[in-house]
Image 1 (cartoon, rainbow over the protein chains, first blue to last red):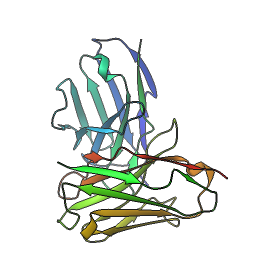
Image 2: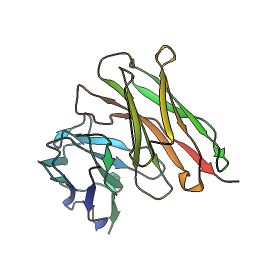
Image 3: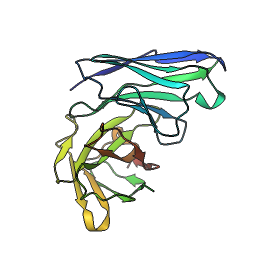
Image 4: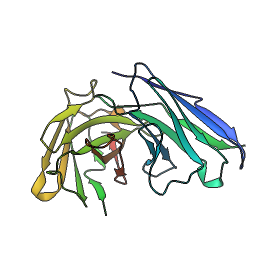
Length: 107
Length: 121
């Protein structure tokens, strides 16, 4: 199975800050990576797929980059509604696997 | 408009078999490339992918759970069923179904709201 490792596990930031979350795959997955946002008590929502393609209706302050084994999710200017947990997921091969999550908290 | 909704028991006893149904609309599981996935999340923990069934009735499962899982579909009813045998308290989780499309990037683009299953005697 492909292991997905996110860092950091948690991060504190302020409204307006720029935040970057990283995700590393245990083997190359080309660009078969997605990012999800999950708020407490809610289902995850797709933010980015194919490593860098923004899902429709997702604000442009979110961006993704990377290929192979190393990926990043960047939020350019944090908004109050962005405080949530973020997950990466590889869709290159079965079984699909998720990272352990990064909790983004208000400083 | 694509929607998915999970249904099933909120409480099961240890050793019992769990059966969950994902009812969906807005797409057909007989269309080429369409897939329905199952994912779970124990309270306070990370997401775990459980398995998938595709338009061609191929199934793929989590390595660690494959001996306990079965996914099936009823295309005419727009439903996908997950069965998990020999339930244990560690299987307590919110269970989600979600769609992917094999002719896209396999992203989980639509999710159900999830159903919490508690395993307890």
